[in-house]
Length: 193
Image (tube, rainbow, N blue to C red; front, side, top):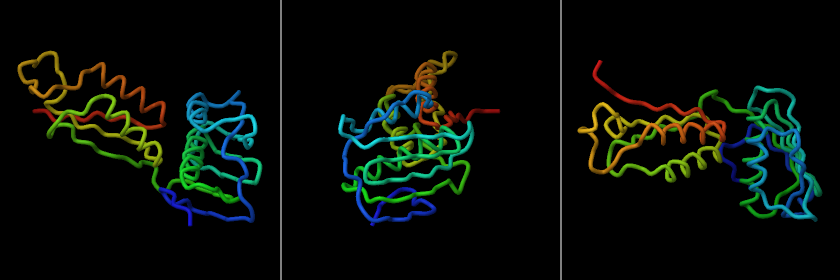
């Protein structure tokens, strides 16, 4: 039983298992975000060959094929390759990987998380980046951060809470980090009209 989140559209289990627990690959020509994620995989000279083939610039669909000696991800765009790698990472957490073919594409174009940073302790940038990493692992692609009075407005410094604020620079840093993970960052503020 494979535990994958979200559950892929189609999984075909084949005879045999991937014989290596490490990978070898050449990321030349890959989207840098895909290459950066692939670098998180365990690597070694006797590893299984990892190939990524991207047919276009758009799309989130992918096919992940695992044989005894290789893993191939075929994707419609860089985001699809990224999600195929996330599925491979989820498989690695489960131990021995069976030979299989997974074909997947999201059911919804927007898959997001809404986080209210106005109640209780203000999250640090590092905490929010960890949240973004988890979102990417689960193939979410939209992060809405509600800040209200916890944003450091330069014109209204007397309103800043004693517990701290998120600055414009931190929001820009989070936006860049989201882009690295194929996530749209949507800061949200409620103000008087």
